[in-house]
Image (tube, rainbow, N blue to C red; front, side, top):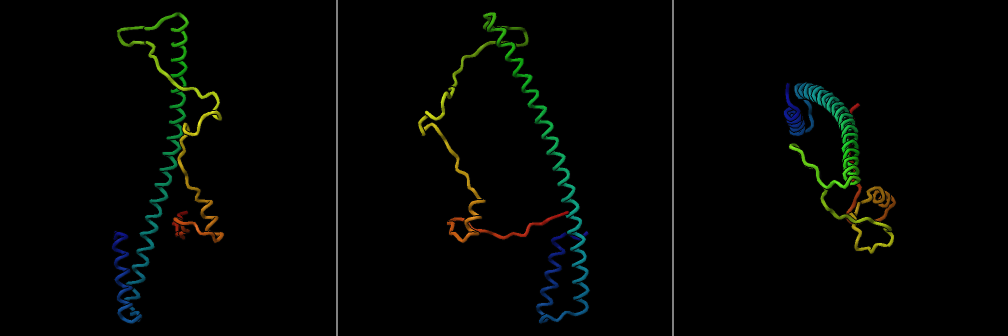
Length: 161
């Protein structure tokens, strides 16, 4: 089957021939134009079916990712519960280290910061990542306000149903 690129190229060539003839469309050109348009419609429809199939696959993959994330969270919860039980038992019995031929359990010193009251902290301890509110920008632009560095762009988005 002819590629979309070739169909578009053929269609452009026919339109150029029509332009060169001063807009006069011969029966041969009209026939070529109809065939090319029909081929283009068929090819685009075929692409549309492929897009729909791929979107279905993406939905299935998303569902599988969600299922696996839930499974992962359950496994992490089990890990944390088991580690807590072992840690609590070792601390209760004053055991610092357990060694077997296959593994070693021990405590390692670490430090962390607990925030007691966030409102008392100096501003230098906060970090912020600026985000752009495109909805507000669009609203201001539509209201006639000048927003430097932004503009509304109209697009034609392909919809496949």
